[in-house]
Structure formats: C-alpha cells, structure tokens
Image (cartoon, rainbow, N blue to C red):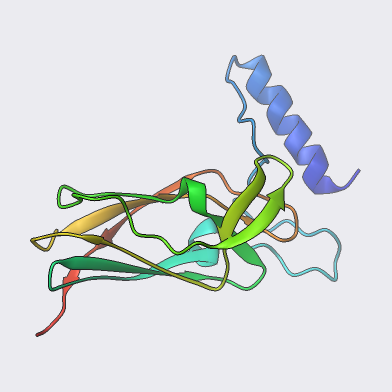
Length: 153
C-alpha cells in the first residue's frame, strides 16, 4: 500500500476515534504526496485552481479561473455568493467525465470563464468549488473571496 493510501486510512481511523465523521469523497492532499520518486508533488488547491480575475463591466461580473495542467474542477460544485447576484451563475457546458464518486459529471480544465448579471459592482464575490488531480487525489470543497475590479469604460 502506498504512503498516500496509508495516510488516508490513518486519517479516517483517527477521525472515527474522535467522533468526527469523515467525508464521503476522496481524501485531499494539503501537502505534496508522491506516488513514487518520479512523480511531481501535487499542488495545493490554491495553486491548482487560481481565481485570476473578477471584473465588473456594464452590469456583468466576469470571473476567470486558471486550472493547472493535470487538474480539473467539477461544474456541479462551482457556486458564487454575492449580494449583487440576481441570476444564477452563467457557466459553460464543460466536458463530460466519468468520476468514481459522482458518476458522469461535467468538468473544466485549463481555464474557466463564468459570469453573472449585477447592476452594481460588488466589492467581492465568494467562490466555492471542488476539484481533483488526474493523479487520483481530490481536494475538499474550497471557499475563497475574490475582490471585484471595475473595468474602465
């Protein structure tokens, strides 16, 4: 059994011993596990999924998220909270992917651009998402706040 699997089992056993329920999804790696010495270390969730833009222009907030090579975001876990949000987040379709935990889902790779209508520019938006590495490790759901910049006319 590889070290990553042993760690996951120990983590689950310790959680049960302390009365903490474990998540029903894959265990995340907050530090760089390797399958073997030839494999590169895994990125942190912040490095793998990086919001790089939140821009308000003409009544629309547009978000841009960089997704590192070898990683993907689940479409169904992506949400945005903002007092300015009046309609659901406008997301591209994504790519169909068969996931061992969720079944057939839509995912994003490389770059994601999404948006929503907002009559006034919010100061920030709260982004919630979950993603995985192709190496077989999924991260727990993440929440981050992204400042919104007003575009110049």
